[in-house]
Length: 473
Image (cartoon, rainbow, N blue to C red; front, side, top):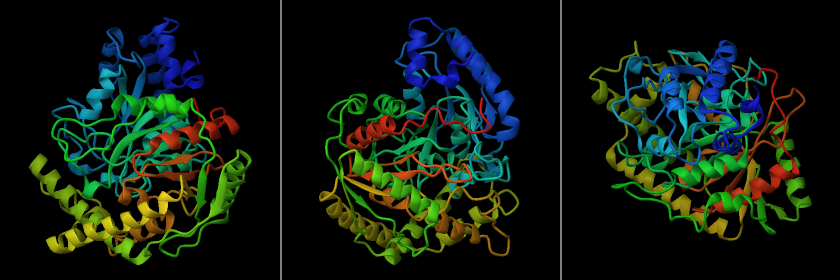
């Protein structure tokens, strides 16, 4: 049985609808794939096999009825299932309710089979927690999967399943998508509700969605999960029409600005520059107007403001976890980087936090004005190809070294978390070592539609679904 390897979620749902396969068959095959591949990949950390088998016997009637799915073990809560966020502090914590996103995925008919590996609290762009160990990249087992959705990306890249839940606060959808050769869209801020437990996270930096093999699966999942829930503090304007229709719509001639300059002055690896040059040439051949540009914002101002939100967010995470569990975060149950980030966050005053929010809002307006003259911004996703595991070392005497290394590796993706704009990593390039290197296309605020149209065009011109890593189901 190879339907899971050769079909995306959309196609699997059609096979179930026409009774060509049964939900039971799909669930059992997904479990078998996990059991076969996870010893090498370490992508799955919490099996949900028995509840998945029970759901397969009585699947719901949604558009993705009977199709198995994976949930990242950060942010989204699944009632009655262990929730760790990759931390020893939460190793035995069990969620008391479904998040709004999980409820919507259930209504869509998806069956949750397992939860995926993450770095502790999602603070690093690699998936190497002390609790669960490193997730391995199926394109090269000694290399990072990226983070923080690295377990999800490794599982999808290895074709355990064609899509998995992911979320993004500084690039955590796009970075692992780039490292693992997948499509990864970060939606507009407020597109998917974080309720009922959260209003926003880190001043709006964090959002939910997925990593997928196909563009249309990303569009369908967003159609099924987007929109506000009662009490949300804000939400994105509703789309003009379903995103699945956008996937079937030609993009027309787009104005695509290209920028490969980092805000922090980090030099970009030749392979990542080559990936952008390749994408630039492809877009030109497809009839788009492509030209070089430079973002009109201060790198120092951006780095300062973002770091204030990131560190105060870390303090909030640890304090909130303590409130949730009644346990005290200490250096014995929290990783050195997480502890140091929280300490740095607590050193900021309330006024310095609000000032950082104001600075980012100012930069957002400047980028917003810049984007008025362009349809899409093309850049690298990362400044380097997937780096070796262990590259983000956090020594106890100077744990913030891990964060400094992260800024060198991922200087591009945090910009759209700050602006709230949608952005996607598209798998168009592999280097001489056979490692995938995604390119990023960012759109105007609220304009996922243009990105989906362009992504579908690129997918047709340069199909990537049949490219599979050495370690795959």
